[in-house]
Image 1 (cartoon, rainbow, N blue to C red):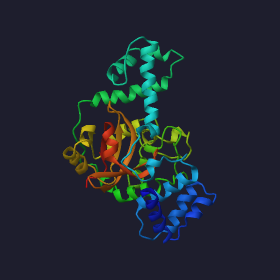
Image 2: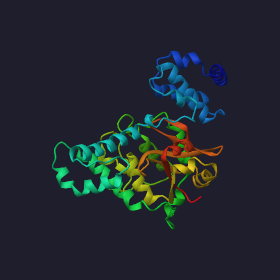
Image 3: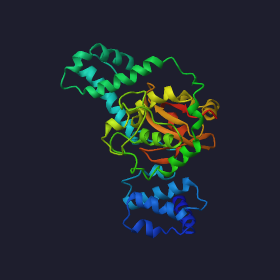
Image 4: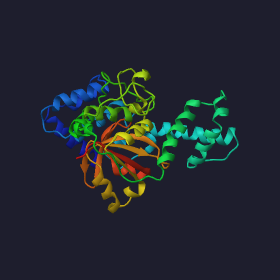
Length: 343
């Protein structure tokens, strides 16, 4: 009964703005057209972005029989199924591939959590592995690159601050937030590619928001982790889109070096009210966030856009939302917050 009452109240609110239930549900509209139609009707009116998201996702559930959006997205931000995140599934497939490779092909028992041994094994047997045509060497290289960085910083959990960088003062959290809200559901494919369904679009989307906020693109070598740029909206134009722009792992590599500061918060910070106050005081609007697995590996990317009651509210793609609870995400295994301005 409560669900029906909530739906009625929502439709009543939007009916006053000239948005009719039948026009959204019955017309032959794409997801992009639905979102654009809602935005046009509420333009210039006092409507919270979160209400727009709620209406948009409610329409998708009704219109597409729940095939395009999960019901938990439509209003209950306290529920997070990590398996729904595309980048998480991709990371787990890679982790399982490596452990199966080492255990089944080379006869050395291991597990996902035993990443240091896995890393040493892959490095020590790299030539042998590289010459094996049955091995996906791209997955091996990806694993080595990511865990080599983690190995270098495994004992470092304190704030890292870089001072004297003048470009930091040009960043506008307001503009980054506005971009994230505007394109959270209506992808900006006229300018950028979409990796939804092709590895996950989270890092690509957050990179767009950071750039809209004033973070400058850098370099032209797409495989160099010191570069960060996107100069094409074509999905497979990999030479014009750096791995640090589009990949959660590589995004973390870049911003560890280029953010004003960063800090890791393990899952214990999200399970204790007193400890979470440290997360809340550190994160600000416009800051980027990496969701980490239990080994400290980034696999999902968000941007803080608002403050809730004892929470930081984020926007993200690959579970498109502007109401993501950082507390619920961090409860899984922890996060890394990259401070983007000195404010």
